[in-house]
Amino acid sequence: MNYWLLKSEPTEFSIDDLKRVGEQIWDGVRNYQVRNSFRDVMKVGDKALFYHSSCKEIGVVGEMEVVLPSEVDPTQFDSKSKYFDAASTIDSPRWFGPKVRFVSKFSTRVPLSVIRSDKRFANMILLRTGNRLSAFVITKEEYDALVQFGR
Image (cartoon, rainbow, N blue to C red):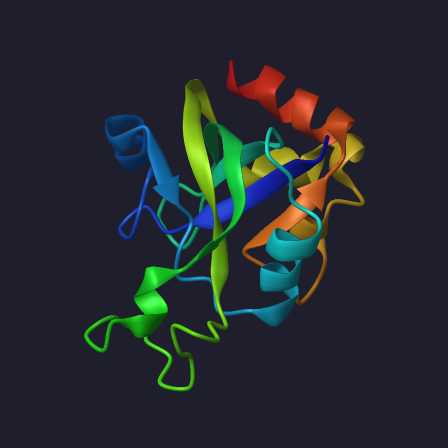
């Protein structure tokens, strides 16, 4: 089993949105490294943390489970979507995302400042200078510690 941290801007899609719909494809990712991780590494049953980014209160806000690791992202075909990709076709799609299921919303958001200050997270990709990845693998120990903080 793998453990993940998936980032989303809450104005686009939040933990409350996922709670309301139950399951959702994680769409809009336009980074080849992340796409390849979804396609080649992510598996059904993997656990993921939901991270609110690019907002006033950034941090880890809940848990998800991977239902399907690599679904075709429909936003790439929608010319009205900001994620539209004219070079992508139905026969040869470029972009994929996992379908995730809501597990829980934390009673307390785990802010980035807490993650930065705890030595257990020193090697986490989230804290690496220049990191722009919106999804990445974390260790089970990091996952468990973040869940404990959030509860």
